[in-house]
Length: 360
Ligand code: F0G
Image 1: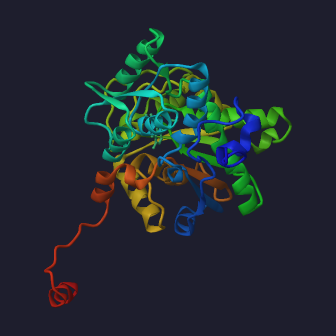
Image 2 (image 1 turned 90 degrees about the horizontal axis):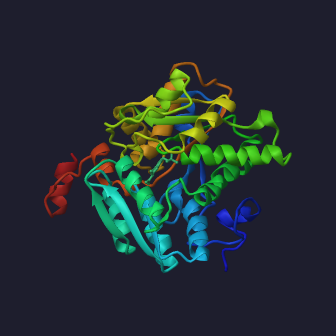
Image 3 (image 1 turned 90 degrees about the vertical axis):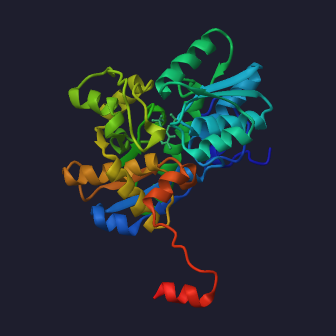
């Protein structure tokens, strides 16, 4: 395959298969954001934009591995529950591998771009009368009954692929700033990425390639209306108390029962990181600020910047820190949120004179 040794597959030594079903995933940009760097006052601030993957989110890194394993196993049907991005990625990788794909979405709570992707790539879409957590309960039952192969982040092969986010961040940050990041700030939904990054760094420490003191502080951000992991961290619990009622404009992380929390919470604690909840208003402000620097992200992604701002205000993040914020999905995933956060189009007449008059 012509993508061997590139993107995610540059890290094949750290992955369970030598090559995956590929749509050329990984090797995403690490952007400088000088205005935000100045405003937040941290010494180095970069944005790792995972929205620049083939289907517009980090999920591609996991799917290239997970769908490869599924096709090697010879399964008949792939399935996932999703707040949208997982379903878009699974639909695309399922199409690429010519496997039947089933996705369960919470009715009315998935951004338009994501449903459109799942639809065009040919997934069978079930709109479930319930939240994401209910969808995941159902799809786990189906997988347990042998009806489908599960490709949510409970699938360990998917998280292996997502480790490469952490590996790329270390390399890119080092070459850009001369040092590894002190802290990685990331949005948390099911806490798959938090777990995957922690595993990646632990493996590097075990291999003697990274000193324990160099492991970045994992810092998770949830929306205030869906923050069971922040609650657990703040109360010093190892277990999550499931939130049955969740609400946020950042629909990607509208999750009340983060299934990877048992793996993610130790990662946050042991790296001396933290977790913080941010309001929808602050998420939208952060989405605008990133857009003003030319970086277009969906609301859930902007939570990382909103979280950093809040932690700077609280004095938790120091000015001398080297920080990377992870932005997980592309602006076009949620065109309605983007349009609502941005300026309104101005109707003008269909002639130059009228346009000039309007501009004055
Ligand atoms: N950001 C975006 C854009 C997401 O789509 C998700 C998760 C997250 C952050 C949270 O990541 O689960 O690893 O903590 N989306 C899943 C989905 C749940 O179905 O697309 P996590």
